[in-house]
Length: 415
Image 1 (cartoon, rainbow, N blue to C red):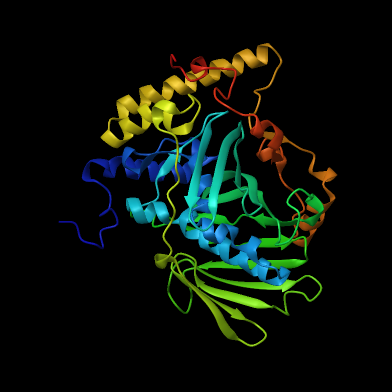
Image 2 (cartoon, rainbow, N blue to C red):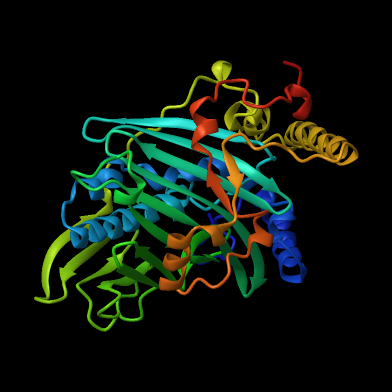
């Protein structure tokens, strides 16, 4: 039996050699680490396009801001909702699987579609699409029509090595809220929140049980002037607990030194919200007490060929069986078909047509520019995400399968 102090105790005996080689290749690799092939036991059969769902696995918290009449309380509800998403986004996989796994890199045009049904929130829909492959970027839109709330955004990840794997997240999210008594059809009556993304690094890599830790900060700025700043500190110096953070919510006219509310604790466990003016605790969030709502997706046989779980099912099945030869064959079918598709597009001087999202010129959106200045966002680094992406509501309203003009030939399969 391996000792718990054995650095490789979590690594299957047959995989220790490949894991050691993988760590050496990471340390000496220059470039984006996502292109490296990971050992079989660290691979996931889930595509990155599915990760967009983590934003709304608590639908009641997602729609809660739309029920608040007071702008200050709405901003606080947005902060609480955002903090509640972090556990799902960054540690639910390691809790469920024992460690963080390397997800499948999505192909251009890949789709992940689903919805949540909640007694309180009603129906919340998810659309996630891989809008760029070189560089890779995923866009998403999460909408609840009943409460007039929508989250959309896009992100890319750039991984590098410096003592451990460092992940820079590029992109942002935009939350649009219809306050109570406001007209859902009048954009001028809606509030918008710009949300920046935290940096990540991987802990416990040498032990073969990698998990994510957050770095630096997240900023949330609202069109009503409220700003939330969340600082991530990893393992707390005093508490010794991982996933620690502290946050302040303030109005831009008052500044960060005059906070209205504070929040601190562990985003993966328990955190406390206080009224900074009285120092009284007004809310306590316990992650284990919050059940996630299951996302409903169509059965595989009813999914479009370009939907994630149908497209990757042979790969996912092979990974689950531990059959790396079959995994390689199934992945190569998709990857080779995609390469051929890009060659045809280049020869015909055309670009792949996105289904649910479009590139925009963000400089034409004055309100967005103001929100960006509020959080100190000076560059969107659009060259690293293939552009700035926004949800195309008109195209989405008329969308029905098949979603792309190209059929199974783009994935190396016959329909």
